[in-house]
Length: 232
Image (cartoon, rainbow, N blue to C red):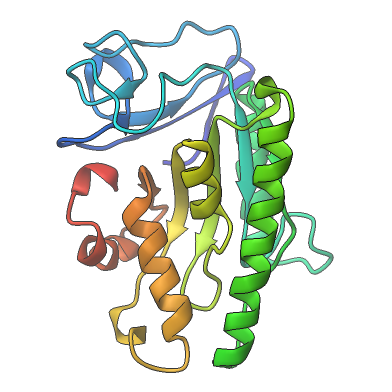
């Protein structure tokens, strides 16, 4: 759903179903994910927390704190890219919405993973560069104050030409949730010049705690990789 402005703050909530392992939760124990303004009372789940499986357990991280620090990344085009586009505009709006909700949002990398020509060697080079960026980010956060580490990673728009070579590695290292907005999966790209990027996208989608879909067109493709519709 589009962000809704109300009483000077933003509330964004995507209702989804859940099954089994830990998921971000929303009001009254219903499955979902929400962003609330700073100072607003946060709803609790049936287990009394904001992240869990409804039985009081958690598969990946401790209960999330609100408001929180969010690591933001857009592999196709950074929000501060000099060339205007719809992707840049949406990335900026997402960051604005998160900040208006009271969260601390950091654009953690301007690394662009976009590879337009189907050049396998170039894709491999980009994957290595992304791994180096992830390693540097982890070293910075693990050696610094704990309260300066992100509590959640948010990636906007990944697909086979622009996979996320950074977020999944950072989330595994820090043990934080991985959220993707506008992720796309095209099974026909499994074999071909973008096979490496396609495989990276599949891996990222499978590990994501939440997949936000601005349109219904991406859902069918995502379900091929993530049959657990509670994450979509």
